[in-house]
Image 1: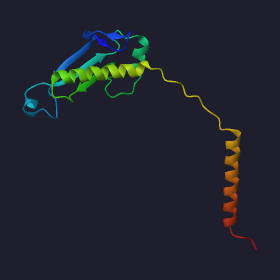
Image 2: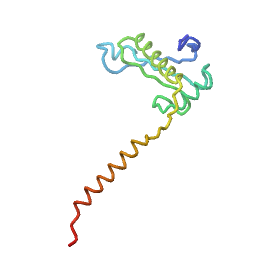
Image 3: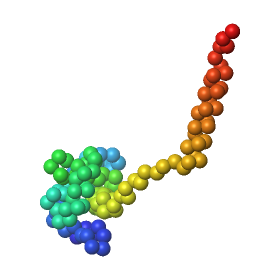
Length: 137
């Protein structure tokens, strides 16, 4: 079980983890051992609630395919187990990020004093520009 919060857990059979050859550091093992991890998580086929599924599918994330599958590639660590934990942590963080509801923006109005100050500044600037013009004689 991948524990997301106190109430939400994802069974590991819903997460497809495959080993791949990683790029980058690894010494002699980089060409021999598959230490990288591809984590695939089908959002629509998961046990998450519909609300969280919709929020995940609404993300504009390049890791999300058109079919609604989230693909996370982990190859930061030198060991397969380290990359597996890294991929699961990134999945957990992504799901936790959509669990927090965003506050709607409340538009504000400028105060009356701020409006007057703005208009006075415009009038003052207009006078300066008027003084720059040529005089009619």
